[in-house]
Amino acid sequence: MHEVSIMAEAVRMAVQSAQAAGARRVTGLRLRVGALSGAVPEALRFAWDVVSRDTIAAGARLEIETVSATGWCAVCNAVFECAGFYNECPRCHNPSSELRRGRELEIAAVEAE
Amino acid sequence: MCKECGCGLGGGSVNIGGHAHDHDPDYGHGHYHGHEHHHEAGHTHGPFTLNLNRSLMEKNDRLAERNRGFFNAKKLLVLNVVSSPGSGKTTFIRETAAKLAGKLRVGVIVGDLATDNDAVRLRSAGVPVVQITTGTVCHLDADMVSKAAAQLALDQLDVLIIENVGNLVCPADYDLGEDLRVVLLSTTEGEDKPLKYPPMFHSANVAIVTKSDLAAAGFNREQTLANLKRVSHHAQVFELSAKTGDGMEGWVDYLVKQRAT
Image (cartoon, rainbow over the protein chains, first blue to last red):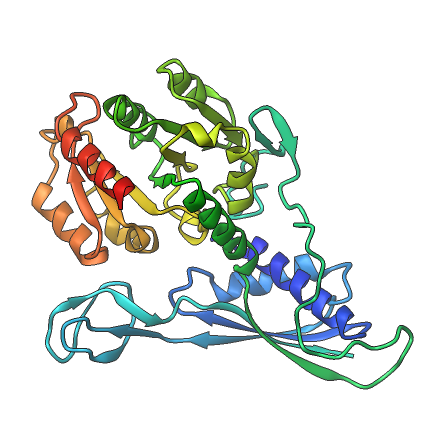
């Protein structure tokens, strides 16, 4: 969807944090991306090469950690793995669209030197 | 090319109420908030890891919270109206403002990639309006809204309606600082729209089935409501026609109640 601007923000945050810590180069970046975040890992990787070019993060290793989606049932309080926004509770079979995890778009860590 | 979704739409910069703005300003906030120690320039050391654990949306989220606090202090009820292009957002907003006349004072911020046609339509109905033309950007963000809001006499308003760019994808991720996210689904669109664009419908506080006067043209009402319920079971649903006024009373009463709470 809008992977380029997401990665542009990731580069901005990585470069800013690394420079503030006295580093001259970003060598790696780890992202945490929820299965239902709407961002596609392949598109993030493609965007990364483009937006990191000409920055101190150029050539850095990109690691994407996928977070599976977890639903929660408001009726019986069950927590369960799910694949979409609308689910049926596996325990009480009521419809449920409350998510507990799976929408993450986070920068987990930056490796620098 | 649109740098958000790669849709290939043309160039240009963000223009708010006739003034050009850079789309990606540095928000004048260069302080570093981490806990890592700072090194002297030129100091060399080996590789190290910084654990950040920060959201990539935090810049927008922070500005959205700032908007929300500001709008709250001004006692404004703020709506973020989203839909596909052509669902009838502008007509719906114009009629909402007309029906609220004498009860609540309405101002509008309207976003489009280009033209101020929607602003002209609303202004001719006597509604104070600021147009944001986003140029290449397929959604409004919190910073554009705060700049646009500064051009309205907010102290003379009770309700601020933000008409987002017609798009059911990207605007879902951008909090603007609204109280209510209102998604429109017209009866001339497919009843499976909520299933096709779940993030947007899932995030909505209010779902409005519009153009009910055209429902005879092969619209499956039961299936649409069932699909809405499935994706956004927490959303308040209204069925109405802005054109004929049918069903508008319930919606307007709801807004008056929301403003009072």
